[in-house]
Image (cartoon, rainbow, N blue to C red; front, side, top):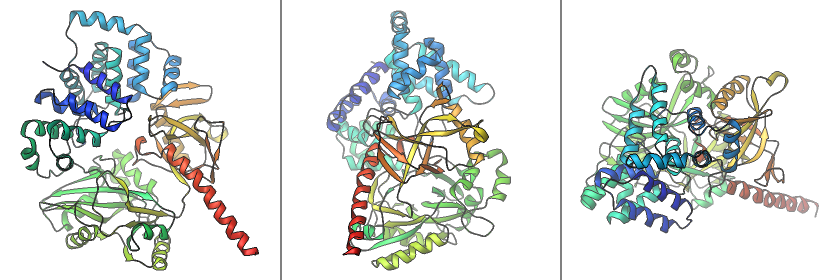
Length: 573
């Protein structure tokens, strides 16, 4: 019998209320092993809020404003209702459920289910797939009709999770890593094999189906598929070179930390695709990089990582924001390419001619990269155990216009999606946070036509809710004020006085003097002298800094002050 979508909704609601990871894994494992092979791939993806694999050509293209419009139409909710309910939880799905319950949609759904079968997970998936396939003139209206019809057939709890799935905001604490464990448990296969298979084909749903039908032997036979991106390995930040050397056992590979766009490049013969750190295909925006890779890489099949930077007329690197024009102005791309030349620096090799290298040591991967890079530049590097030599290298990086250094453990493997201490970043400014804009005030005077005073929020890692820790209007250019105003208006939830409340979506890097305790904000913290350094187009809200990070920085600043006070006292004694 076909699995009902309400079963997935109830499962997701249940695991959202549980903290123990093993209990979550058991519940999901028990569910997916009871459904048919035709459903398991769909169910697995829906549970983690991933309708299609990242590399798929399917895109729903359902905007936040469309979701709001349909919810208002279906529930007869007012702008005040929308803002009030969203403000309580910051969760679009919960808002949808509450509004449907308040407006009597439960009775409507109950009556409808008496005359027709309940929605199955295949029903929901096929509708979403139809929406994703719609292209061309009038596509927005046709997509809206299909989605509205689907939502009108749902119970409030089902609607909650359809909205969550569409927006990719499940917030139930069950991510792809836990799903890999659930698959391993359900079909009695090694977790390492499941993880490797998922990394190689980039479709957790297909991995589950293969595990169900073919088990260990089926997973073992999976080969690397090019042109789907691997999740990037991430780095932690440290204060200085001494800390990096200590963490890496006294010796490290220091690389220039470039202020550009991190890319993962896949090549098979003459075909080349380029992906951003968010796994988005950005190939069309970097045609000269495609040509460079096609001509220079000495391998038939390869996956390499690097940084694309913008180059000024003086041949020095331009700030990150300049390069972003490549991705924002596709219509004028040829003109922008001439105005803002791009250059590529490589720093890692993950796969070459049939050999997957992620389990190899950093130094071995670099040695292979040196053999295949042709005339493509490698990121400047210095391997040393001498802190003075590393400091000189840091100063050189800064002098040449770069952010600082990366420190990489010599024997470190490549761990996709993990943020550990094997890779460390060292920048000049420590007091920065990646925060999310959750509201903005209309400006005054010269800024009166822009949303230009931004409410900056950190993410609660347990609930996924965003809490404000400061406001600022400083740091952006007029062009950026204009751009960010247009983006925020598309994310609008409601408006109260001069304040526009928005869906948390835009990430900005913010510098500040210190973190203070504050009763003004629900978070309990406030930033002193906050200033936006850059708009982080390459980061999702889920990658923003958390409240826990804010707490750690708050405590850390007192230790630094105490240390400085002791140093000052020692000078007088």
